Image (cartoon, rainbow over all chains, first blue to last red):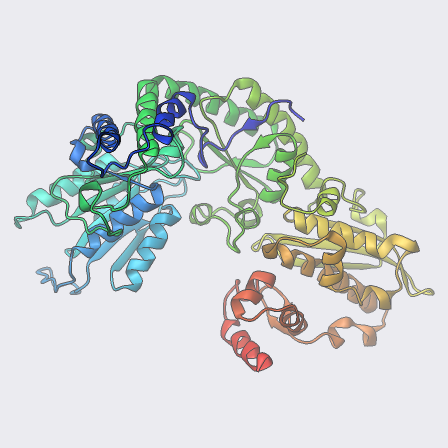
Length: 407
Length: 201
């Protein structure tokens, strides 16, 4: 076993950066005040939260009032979908093109969204929202044209991920945002009719999060994906977007998300995002180089393996392979034994009965589908780590294949 | 390793050091019974080759191959050991092995992995049936004794339903988690739900 464990599961979560922990600690110790309190301990907490809000707003190129702190990506996504659609009561839509008339509010997502979007959308559908799920192409990319074709007069919200969590593919959010902006501008109604949300959880700290550049109305982030702590997330909500709060109580976060603020988490989240933003471009280039090296070597040295998802248009730290005839969980456990942490979309590894909906959407044959392994690189990843992983992986794949009846 | 391992020590041992799997090619092993169950679609395929001594009516050698997770590999390996220890099992004893017996020897499996041990028991029966067929002992084919298949896609039998209900399953969902029944085409779901309601009454 490798003396130092190798962590290649950064898409699942990242370790807390030491600087982030340092920024958080005072708010877990002496600065324990409730930001809602009038005394100085309370005001100290409040000031820290507002500074964090300004720091985040600067990176997202928005106003501090447009930032809501939540408990994480899942809550941000749920708040975006339920929050936007609940404010819009279903009403008849008069259509002038002679097509089907629909009364219900329409939501568009893609079939490769994270479960936090998929399940929230399916819940809305059960409550009467009309739902369209757009397919991705075989490389895991959503086309702007397909989104355009899915838009109906009763469409109120489009929610598409900036980058996929399993295969890392980067979606053309800016182009879709432009198209939506144009539709809104051409609309004769006074109020904005069509809103655009992006789940940017996997892109946090890696891609450009400028909300004006992306042309989105809402954007979700989660701190623990960019070396912050678990339990803190962000939802950007552009001014003018009406949002119905999902957690009611003491009116925190401009009345949009009640509950005593997780001060340390929020401070850490802003610190982590700032740190990531400062080295974003450098880190991107470094990860991309390592990723390409890793992919090239695996494809060259291991027989019957394929890379899932687009080879270039993907997050710099993401790789996702399918190994023919063997099962993902078996590979993961053998890797774990060697001190290497990775992840799989196989049914057995997920604990559910179904293999990954993302890989299934790419129409990967079954004999390959169950043998998927995701390696996601991060700040600490070195070329030596990858060489060691490849060496072990070669042996593991070959051993498991001798056990497999599939040919 | 560490304490944070999801399976028992026994499963781990069989997963990392599988016993009796087919290393040589199929032909040179000269099996007289071959069985295969599962499908690549659901993520488990088990194949088993057995050599039966006709005079003794006993399994004298056995090899297997499994496509699946650690618990599927561990289950097949353990099953092979159970059959071959003490010089090999009589056919009638081998046919008495239940998923529960395999589970017990494995020191248990996580709840969502129970179906892996079910497949082990099935592949053994399939191999023995194949031997019966090839050796013209058609009357002994287990399929004849075994209750009917209730989920065609995944080959789940009524016997398994009875076992599952005996083990405490209350709903179709419990049963599906255990056996994957109904997760193929889904046509049998309603029928099985009715069977469960009737059996639990």
